[in-house]
Image (cartoon, rainbow, N blue to C red; front, side, top):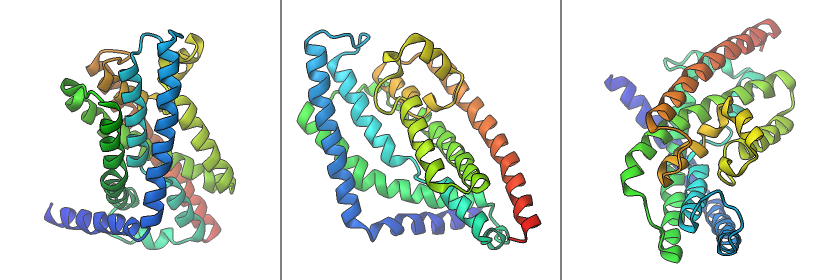
Length: 264
């Protein structure tokens, strides 16, 4: 157990310190998020003040949703699947396989460090500025359920990203798969706006996919507009964690066998 914690600490530091070299990129990410939130602020203020349909959302609820959506965007791992695809494609996967820790854990631990850096230096400033300019009201009683949901959503995001990484390897189209992943997650996860504002037929289709658990489920819990009972949502997230982990293992083994056959 102590050995595992030591490995986690080392990889966590690697991920954390990796981004500390790019202060300019951190600043740009903060500025772009502030611009996005500012635009959304005025758009939704106009929509709700003119009583255009917002499906019952108040302005504070909508603003909370937008701000925390940006916070989650920076917390979630970025392109962990691409890292795995590059390892397999280059043949360096053979080196990673000799290490005492599984590849999934190696990448997960390092990306937790990356997420911690983004949380401290991007997400926290977004939250502070959001509180200052909008007098944002936190739904305190929902914070613990919200955090629990995020932990599961984080794992769901990791496995989805890994699966898209496998697709990059099998199709030899890194840019195309990355663009597809970004488009699918943006449209089907509730990153830009609550899924309750989508047409009913679209909501029914999204409900059978795991993507809405990335943003819409935890944010719905936070603002008190969850699409179902809290424990039902948590159980659904747990179910998708298991399903996606199984799919990852299946496609990973197929990819590894292909590398071995090709002599990678």
